[in-house]
Image 1 (cartoon, helix red, strand yellow):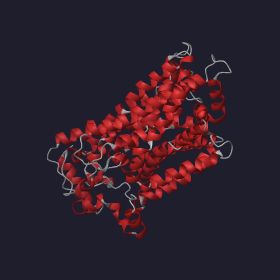
Image 2 (cartoon, rainbow, N blue to C red):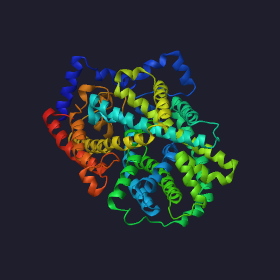
Image 3 (tube, one colour):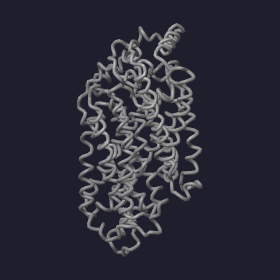
Image 4 (cartoon, rainbow, N blue to C red):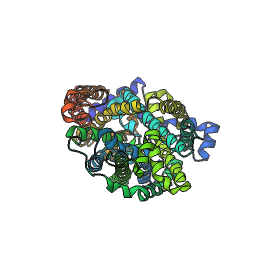
Length: 534
């Protein structure tokens, strides 16, 4: 593997007319600017609507220095009722006590917040959306499969959020508002935010968390006194290692799936920003709301479902509300002593999911463009409308028929993300960084307007849309598929428990990460040696 061979390969590509890197480098980086000539798009741009899709942002346009808003993006995305719902699974689905549930939530989130926080640091250095970066591992065509998997996961989480938000909104209407109407309200608000794009979305995320904080503080003030009425720990027969690991797998899947969209929100930051600063803002923006709200959900659900409390106690009404209206009903019942003010707080809580849905809609558009590259000429905001048209009917149907099935399905499809993380990390640390150190003469001749840095050595900016200059993706796809040979016997779902998981609990996430990383290292090493290039 040498710099000379790579330069020769580039020359061959140029001669074939696939792409003229020397003359069109800056044009390639700004490829989607062609649709900005449309008069309607120009008007939207003048109103602050973002049209940029997957085209990388040149370093000259990476000028944002308001790094603190990255914290609030992730904080608001997770400071909502879905995080509360995830926490309730410990006592409700796995029979764990408050102590066991909170310890799992604390330690596994501490670990799983790290990958998306680290990937977020790549955005300012490269100006590339997260799945565009993945092309340097999975290839131009291989990343299509990854984007389809990610689209399924993100769409599923949007449906869950919409259902929870709609049910919670309907719970305070005394029958005057149906679940369907509540879902429509939540999704339309999310559409408006994602349609506008980065500027409006980040502004909303900076302020939307505060009303939700008030809601949770009031709920804790009204219901906190009942948290001491039950034992902190579950019986030893329930809190077994397999049960704890299965709950841990669910918790891991909640946060780790942010990794494929982590840098989507950092590509406008200045390249000179400290990576430590970006990492900490992202990590804390994820860790603080997820851990606090999930623990709150675990505590209140454990009280509501405790068999030791008398039927006449206040928490008994929480259980009735939970059984009739799910998590939204539980929170509405906790806030009910506040009267109309409690209803108002419940409405605010129902709308808290809009911050998560809107940000996810935003990233879904980029995945659609990467899954169908011909759509690169379509402005980003169009895909916000498209995904709304998909999520809205599925959420309405799902609220009445397959909510539990959808939740189980998301637990299954989320395993792929662990393998995805391992593959990107191996490509970066084992291959990209090693190549840069072994080829110090490599320059950024492809685009003289982009300054030469270690990162542009690792990931040449103009390669992002040139299939012949990217990896084939065979090694990455093969490693991901092969890893499932060990994941399947290690998974524990309601409809299937593998032979390994029967003894250990669900350890599919952990094994997917390790096995995919090892297999990819071997296969990619062979590929690089055979081709003589990355």
